[in-house]
Length: 251
Length: 163
Image (cartoon, rainbow over all chains, first blue to last red; front, side, top):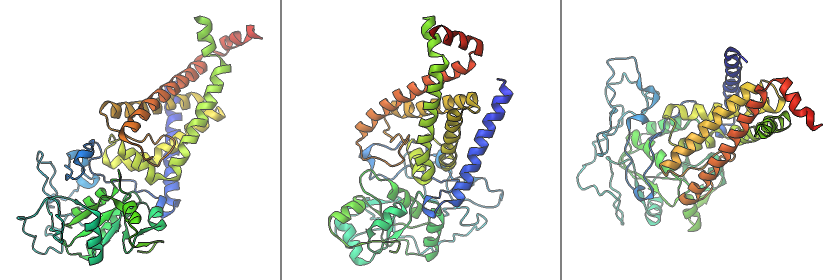
């Protein structure tokens, strides 16, 4: 068989595969749909083993989103391009070039005065001190702290798949499945709601090894929310304690 | 030795291997096609694919597996399909091998797109088996290729004396 014929047949196979993928993704139910271009932190760096779960993640250049090449030369991208050693990289104020036009030079954030960086504990201590942590995408908190925030009426976000959410979720929690298409739109919607950036927000997934809540926390931190707290135990822990659970597609 | 090698590339064996490989790839592709977000998660967990390509790979690769597998089962474009499987299996072996080498436990995501609740040690042990399995399938795909490459005349002479 000639090389030429192989290349032609292979291209036909690959092209058909791509076309099938395109069509099937178009026709897929929302919860089976996937955005063609994903944006993931640390896509090519291995996470540290369980010991470092509470540490904020560093961001290598490899994790840059695909929208980096904007033609507008006058657009100041506030997002830093290089990670500065081990220190937490300065946060980007504008999360998504798709969401916010890069020509907006001024900060589009609701932008209340940033909370004082001093006297911010790295880990939210017990009691009711949930201080904002603008330098870290998230802080992990205990079940009791989660319950306290729940009773206070803090917003909750569920990062799990839609099917899991509908099967049961923390009462009042809103669904933002990080792996399904449209996650950026949902995050954008939250951004537009103009939540208080320093008010505590709880995100969770299925506990254990689940990293989806951290991924969602990072997205929320990227839009300027300074007090995203990860419920490490997640829904299984919540359920085990018999705290309020709702079923179905609504919070 | 020559007898063994000619049996290994005999149509009797290679056609069976060809169909088996095709069925395996078709079966492996279906769960991924049915739940792209879950498979994208699997791909991401390997921490090898650049961020913008994770989803595109998760969407397109399963269909390529399906088509190449179906082509082998049906005997259409079988050389191209077999070469494609050699390529895919090499990539799988590389992906598992790299993560095994850097002790990063991953769910294989080969036939099942949902993470099983296993400890890192169990996952790493599984990955060694996957490596072995993929190597076996790579060998099978190579034999299929060798069988196709063999001219029809010599294939007949191999089959001839046994009858």
